Each structure stands twice: as C-alpha cells, then as structure tokens.
Image 1 (tube, rainbow, N blue to C red):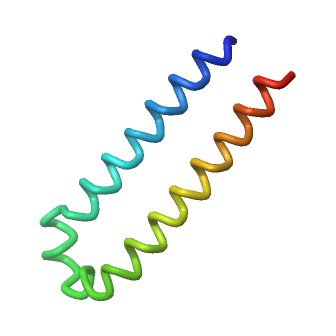
Image 2 (cartoon, rainbow, N blue to C red):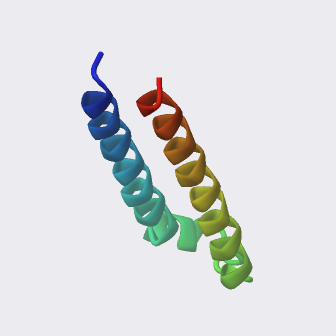
Length: 69
C-alpha cells in the first residue's frame, strides 16, 4: 500500500473521529439524560484536544519514519 494512500485514509479516519466526537458532545440526548454532562466542559475539551494532539503527532512520526525507509 502506498504511503499517500495511507496518509489519505488516516486523514479521513481522523476527520470522521473529530466530527463524530463533536456530534456526540453537543447532542440533546446527552444533555437530557445527564444534567451534569456539560459541567467542567473546559477541562473535558482540554483533555480531548490533548488526546487528539498526541495522536496527530504519533501519526506524523509514523509517516516520517515510513517516508525515510
């Protein structure tokens, strides 16, 4: 499998993960069933964004290693 194809697939999967995370986070069902769901949303968002940053950095490192082979 070519590196470009792997990069495209990775970007698509990561974009889908971000979209689905946001959709779940703002869904009315979560708000109605759990009243405290939106409490401390800043810390939750910070943890989520830091997780995304770590994954993005890991993917970049993997692709750089693959390109240098």
